[in-house]
Image (cartoon, rainbow, N blue to C red; front, top):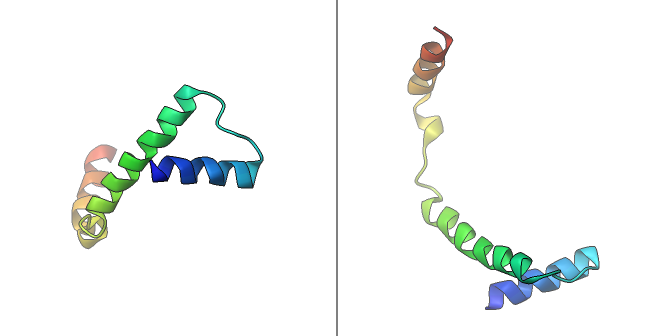
Length: 63
């Protein structure tokens, strides 16, 4: 996995440590799928386009 190798290299370079155990390696590998998921929705979430619904949600929570 190129992402995992790059992540481990960056950690070693910036922090001077190596990945401590298999659990840490698995979490770093899972990060690749998390990043990919965020990349898939990039540009599709338009929360700021509908401030009126946000305002309504705030008002509803207040009451």
